[in-house]
Length: 104
Image (cartoon, rainbow, N blue to C red; front, side, top):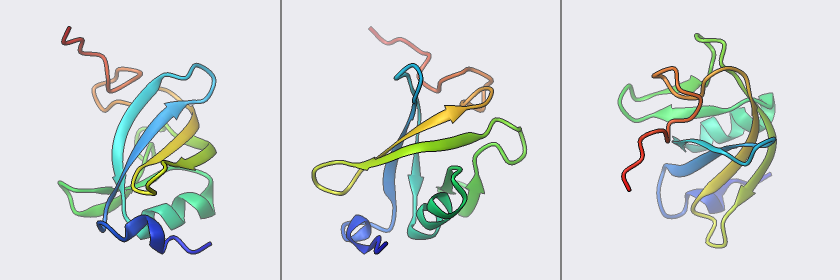
């Protein structure tokens, strides 16, 4: 699969992670082409860490893995949505989802 069209606007593409069974949005992270390829190859999510400037496999150290169920792109091919089977917490704080702070 040629992934070039997803990286025409930027080297990083925002990626929304959604729990397949509940529809809950778990997190937003960024993928570069290499992490997208690794996600497709392994069946588990890989991202590009902007702060550490390195690839990371979600859950590799915590055990809170994200098994890929489906991958979608938006209408402009500049955002990815991945549905997953989440093991444990998705958020580094220990919360199931990164979106736990209600603003309004």
